[in-house]
Amino acid sequence: MMCHLLIALLTVSASLAASPSDPAVPLFFIANHGQAPPEVQFMAQGSGLTAYFSPGEALFRVREQSVHMQLVGARPSADVEGLEPLAGEANFLTGEPGQWRVGVPLYRAVAYRQLYPGIDMLYGANGRDFKSEFVVAPGADPTEIRLRYGSDGKVHIDELGELIIPLNGRELLELAPTIYQDRAGSRVPVAGQFALAADGTVSFAIGEYDPSLPLILDPVLSYSTLLGGSSSDAATALAVDSTGAAYIAGFTASYDFPAANPEQNFNAGGNDAFVAKLNPSGNGLVYCTYLGGRGDDRAYGIAVDAAGSAYVTGSTTSTNFPARNSIQATLKGAKN
Image 1 (cartoon, rainbow, N blue to C red):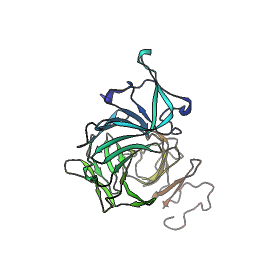
Image 2: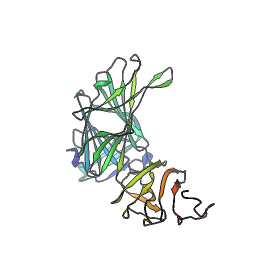
Image 3: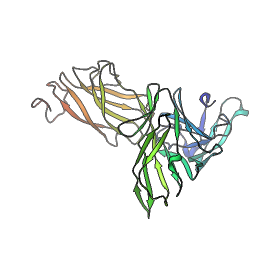
Image 4: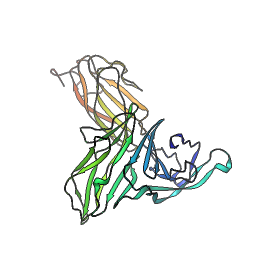
């Protein structure tokens, strides 16, 4: 079974000489040359998750948790093929020398050809996130596309139009799809969104478009994780740096909010702002700190520069809000 796949040691040739989860290395897809169960044709590691691609389905793993994405009604013989070969190769050195696999080719993307009549599905990279793309040929029917996710909770669509797939305290997110057509070298947006049927299958609701041109449906798969304490917590802003690390700002009334390398390791009263940085895999805090005084303190915006410094905006009613090298060191009015 794919869920028992274990790779003990993976080496990559000099042109890609780093761990495949290293944010400096682009996400790549590895052909299965016997280092994985036979039903797996390609595998890849992205931000916080590993993916295995087989005919008719893909499997995504976050730590020990797995989600199957079944391609409902798809052509069962639609194999997965590698696209855009890379210069590097992978070597799997595990077990006895006779079990080693060396010179395994790497690809920039993979494709399921004619998954549905006139429809290809491609997987590539958006930074360290997986980026799927359905390419609908002229005259083909995009309503044929149906996906079913096997997870430990109810799949749902949030207020941003993102598809949320629960995963034992974490979430996989399919970001709201970008749908478009290319016309005379220009990208023409097409209205559309995820749709969820009563049986739990996911499809796309698409507005008017030109059926004589190809149609592209372009969601991005990412991760989410729980961050909070035992009281009310709210994340209000998010920024991502060039490595894929996430910077989160918000406010919390919790006295047990997780702290890591904090500037302030306690809630000073009421709501305090918080600022947190998650590593590119989303499975560890680089830092997380309270920021506040005795009053009501809330962060509403965050930005990050090329050096990884975070800039936070918000409001405070605290007369003892922590200030350092400040233009204004005291509260002016009821709320600043």
